[in-house]
Image (cartoon, rainbow, N blue to C red; front, side, top):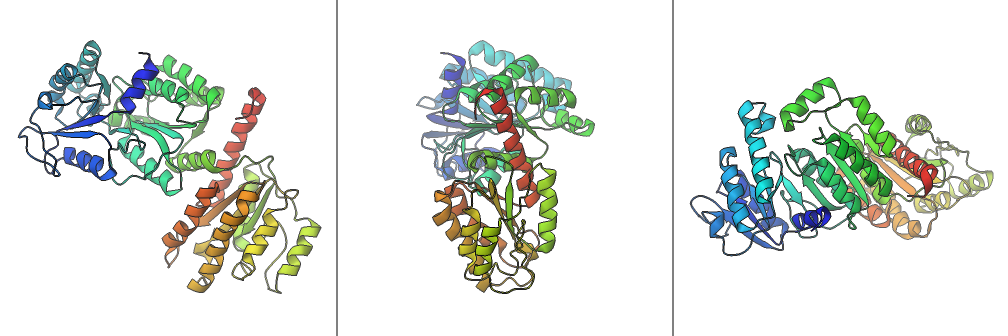
Length: 479
């Protein structure tokens, strides 16, 4: 069995045991996640007393489980891990996800010694280790998870992450934006299964189109370099390197025991590979959403609609700074629009087009449709809805704006040749923006319209998306 086949078996277990699944302990939370998410395989709680947990019969020892076990979640104390590895080897377990901490990330000599010991022991008995100090595997196809609730549904993005908390955050944040994952893994200290092996696996995984990563440090630099070069040549790779400042490097060492490495070296490596580097979790989410949903623009001409007068000025700066041009609205289009618009103060037919006075009329849908269908005008349309700026916003014009945009998305966009994005700013408001965002987000993501939370983030993400495609075109072939 080659490495890819072995990793595929690890990501697709038919049975899971949770060691340390005692009432009120962290193991119970893992168990509740598996049950609540609907894991399709067998679940075996293990605790020293063999007492029932979450309505599931438990076993006092992993050797007492009557059936085969493919994957073990370990919530036992660090000194118990060597014995568990031996028992798992005897039971035929493929992999152990070590939630257990207290190893090299502790900074202690004993923790580092114990981590080296379990890594050597696992290799000698043929059991793979994920972690320690991690959450392990997430596979929505099997409804296998370490947390609940996580979004239901399967997508085409793989995520590898050293931080457990960041793994869960990204799964939820991307899921809220309408994108789902093929697989994800929190791999912690990476004493065995590491960044290079995971990158190699996801590069050839037929269920994955986009690879995203949060990495604090690498175990095998040459292997990771080869892996990311190959992966980025095959599919988009988006990397957030945590601990890129001196202070962050110190935090990374205490978090996962990682040696962060030179930030300049990371820049050079990812640029040479053609991977996309981001510097925040928010940017990572934006890039995943962009690569998953946005139709590729054929150029950098952008038409901006919506917002107020001040918002259009700021938006112009955002898009110009990111390398886009804002062509004027053609005379014929202006003439058509003028015939649709009632005489309102403040409406200026330029690009960006301030719709603040007109956006709440019954003709909003027709206007958006007319603007977005003119493919000779621009390569990309972006509609800006600044809920936080709408002092006069009410339930009446809520339905006109939100329903109009939803109608435009569902009826018009599937027939359009030009990509469309939506920027929804909502953070400072007195009404239920969450309902509006959900009402817009779901139909938009269904038809492939990405939703961003500011014009600046939309411009930044789409610029990086365009630069990636331009690089791939020079390097030989469209992505």
